[in-house]
Each structure stands twice: as C-alpha cells, then as structure tokens.
Image 1 (cartoon, rainbow, N blue to C red):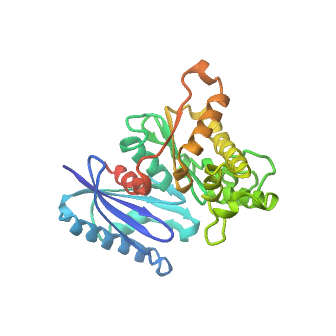
Image 2 (image 1 turned 180 degrees about the vertical axis):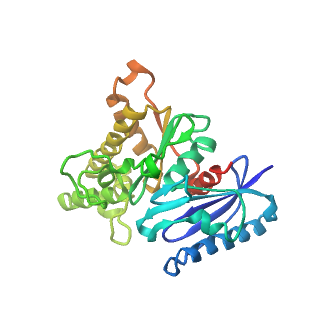
Image 3 (image 1 turned 30 degrees about the vertical axis):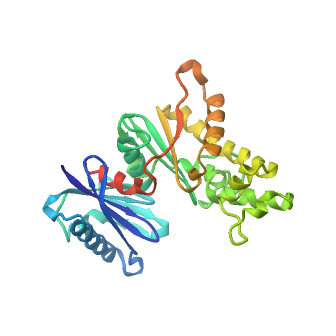
Length: 315
C-alpha cells in the first residue's frame, strides 16, 4: 500500500491527512496558519503538520510517496506557485520551492476546488468518470472540472472559475466586483439574502421559527419548507433555479457524465437536489435527444474532499 499526504489550505485552518492509494484517510490533523508571519512560516507550518500526521499514522517520512496541496485562488500548477489568493494574502507564493527547503519529496499544487473535483472523480460521487464537474455551494460558489480524466486549469491556472459566469445582466453585486455572477445567487450568501427578503415580505412565515439565535442561515428556508411553509418553499424553488441555471450553462459547454454538488448548502439533500435535477433535465441543450442529461448527485467525500483531492495530485 502506498501512502500520500494531502494538504487542504484554508483561510482559518490548514488540514492535512495521510491518504492511502485507495483514497482512505489514515490519519489527519489541523493547524491555524501563521499568515501574518509570511509565506516561509506557512511552509514550515505545513512541513511540521506533515511530520505530525505521519507520526500519528505510525509511519515514517520514507513511507510517503508524495505531498499534494490544494489552495484557494489562482494556482500556476506548472510552476508550483499560488499566484493570488485574496483571503490568505498570497501573492506569487512559490509554495513548492519553499516547502522543498524542509523536505525533498514529490510535490504538486492545485486550486482547492479542482482538487476536490479530482478526489470526487477518483474516489467519490464521480468515481470512474472521465468527464465531470464539481460545484461547491458555500460562502461562494467554487467549481472544478475534469475533462478527459484531467483537471482543467486554463492559462496559468486562471480558469475553472464557474462561480463568476453571469446569469443575470446587471444583477446582484458579487464579491468579485461584477454584477449578476452565479455566485451572487447560488451561494449560501445569496440564499441568506433571498431568505431575508422573503421574511420581510412574509413576517408570519414559519421561517421565523427556524432562525438560529435570531439569525437567518442557509438552513432557515429549507427547514421551514419541510414544515410546509409556502413562503419558504417559494424561496427554495427560486434558489434551486439559480443553482440549476448555472449548471445548465456549464453542462452546455462541457457535457459531463455527472455533476457533483458539495458545500454546506448541499446538506439540504433531496429537497434541493430533486428540484435542480428537474430543472436541468428540462433546460439542457438538446435535452434527451442528444444523450442522457447528466445526473446531478451529491458529492460523497464531504469535508475530506480537499485532503483526498490534494493527495490525488501526486498519486
């Protein structure tokens, strides 16, 4: 059995896990990155974390065949550089070069959503598929594409930003500065905004009973809809159409075998998935006359997709 390490880099934490060749996480751990202390400090933190999980797994460094990194932002995988990651303050971070100061081992780096897509197609919801894409519905909308078995990165890693396709000209302002982006409507942030508007319009809605500490969350409308609330059901119907609209646009370009949905909002399950599948099946180009419309399924690796996907880069 071969072993690899996958490192999932986030703004609040860095997660690492020892992953075997079957895609199973043997051991994992987390640290808080020393972002304020610079990029060299972060590289050292990641090396220390590797040593920690190797020890916890009862292995030695010589047992590890490679280390893969998944990072937010634009990643130039060929050069091993995180070109830009706003939330982490990374600018031209030569990650693989910095990491090699501490450990001479096979390494690779990729965008975190791309890594998740790779992990899901190797070991999760898109297993054994050569053409698939992954959508994560969280604070934003992340996408990763697998085309003919390979990660689609675009020129210098700047591609695969599906969250920023425009679904409504002149629409809601997105965090990227543009208007009408898919992310502005299909993210958890967008869902919360839509729920808040509905609550103002329907103050007697059951959504008032599903608030958390008096606040709207991405679960508020779903939980009220399950109780039969009409206003909440309308919110979910509209939100599902927003999610599905972006998926239809991407299917028409890439025509994958399967589409995987992950992220916090995906935990709603079938109440969301059934609506998305219904809309997609009706609105894809050529619908069933060309070939079966790709099925929209839940990602299976959950919060481990980043670790497993990053490890997959060096398998």
